[in-house]
Length: 420
Ligand code: UD1
Image 1 (cartoon, rainbow, N blue to C red):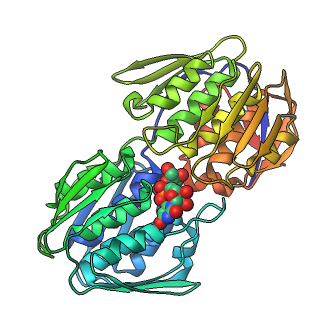
Image 2 (image 1 turned 60 degrees about the horizontal axis):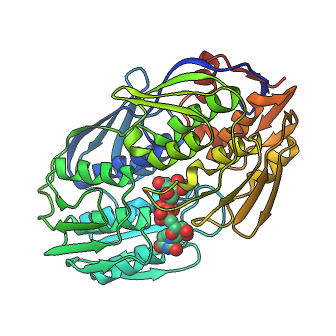
Image 3 (image 1 turned 30 degrees about the vertical axis):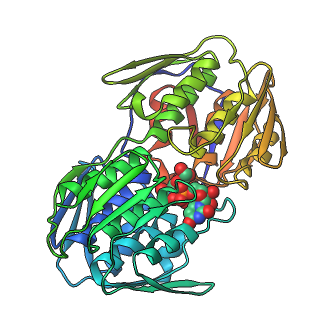
């Protein structure tokens, strides 16, 4: 479905189950490069980025089968993996950069074309390169590709300038087979990073400090890891999307599988906005009635408010009472959806990495374009409270990261249909 019509929908009610996280599963899939045999992942979301990563891994010699009925992914590594990642898939997803560390660790060399992904400004990889170079890798980078060689990586003491998710994951993976101990300081602490570390430990890697900012990896011999079955961590961003939809429509939704412990700052912010947040062992129930109140928010590395929540929060702020300021500290260019929200009548002014949001009484339907995954989902949420019809194109972005967003929202009472 390329284009949809979202109608103003009454309060959303009911229960929705949160799928596995895109930002975890793509990295867990890459874990299959570490050991010959059959790897199994469960709780795998049915999203196009999984298919793209599957085809990238296929070109490296991994046989990937997805079973949509059971949300299971089977990855067979028959040994003899390649180290050249072809441009077609590498260019289309950002997570393709995650083959860098594993291929260096397992093959001692890697060549891949420069990564793509969401288009929200420059996404440098200098920290990946600096960390892997400190471990003995030699890089040859050009505008369109990266090549690296390291017959023997050695453990190193590395401090990241910034807790980058991707750099943390690549350095941890490279260190799995390095000689000696690698200590990574100022590491990213996101639940998805911890999920990858836990998978590697289950496979036989030695990693301490998982989920903390100092991760210590003791290298083990190549060929000593073994395949495992692992369940993908639930997606905190998809969970947040259903919470935002419930909040703006004044609904009551049980988001089953949402991990309150992974979403504390987000939950605190929406609670400050007037949403009732009721965490339990099964998930998080959110209820809202009356108008939301505006708040100031800034995006920060975990456990701060993730940049991926931002379009959802700005959508909530756009219809809340009063004025709120959203400050983006990770990706300054990630405000492109503001123009689209403005077409729906939102009153938002951007100034550098700040967006000043004056809440309006009512959004009104218009034709808008989804600029990336999260912004696309946020426009769908906005459409639920806009008067009239909101026609959204560019839905293929949303399908990269959301497992049946429209079906799940529909089951909660959202009125969404294909555009004629
Ligand atoms: C990952 C997620 C993305 C999420 C982001 C932040 C995937 C595929 N993507 O992206 O959805 O929005 O984390 O939670 O999992 N930086 C550098 N040099 C580097 C690496 C990063 O300057 O070598 C900067 C980036 O430009 C950005 C910040 O560090 O400003 C964070 O980047 P990082 O945490 O690496 O995010 P990604 O792995 O790109």
